[in-house]
Image 1 (cartoon, rainbow, N blue to C red):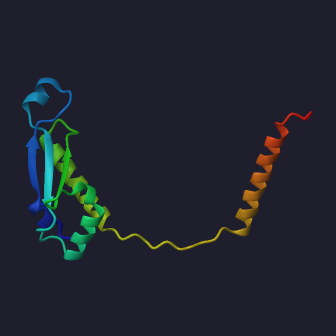
Image 2: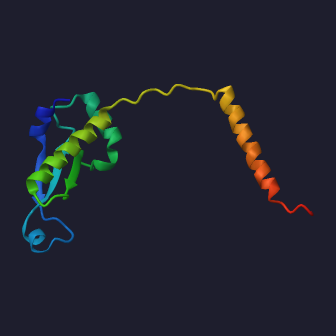
Image 3: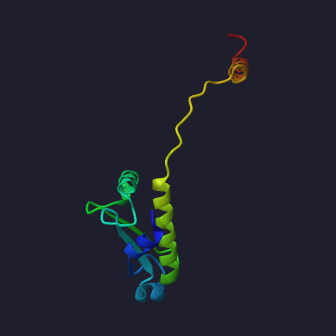
Amino acid sequence: MDQEIILNELDYKAVRSSGPGGQHANKTATKVELSFDIANSEGLSEQEKKRIFLKLAARINKEGILKMNIEDSRSQHTNKNIVTENFFTEIEKALEKAKPRKKTKPTKASKIKRLNAKKRKSEIKSNRKDPLK
């Protein structure tokens, strides 16, 4: 993954934020929408593209474009920086390879501990019963 090439391929669009904010929100375009065409990217290898399509399928539309938006700040510039950071974090997470799970068995001590806890719980519950019945 070449971040510099990818940075040049990102498309930003500033739109008006939703929600409260009064006059400022109504007249300034502070919400930033980022779109990235994964299939036509030169900064990613074919293997990386496949991995991203698998991991981020919910965020990618039918045209193969990954879209993200942010409206946290009142500043368009700050929102642009935040959405870019979030984008690279998501891409890096998607490209991480999961470590294979090692199968393990519970230890003898943990089995004994579990059984003792079950016995104690059983005794507590049996002591709740009415002694006359």
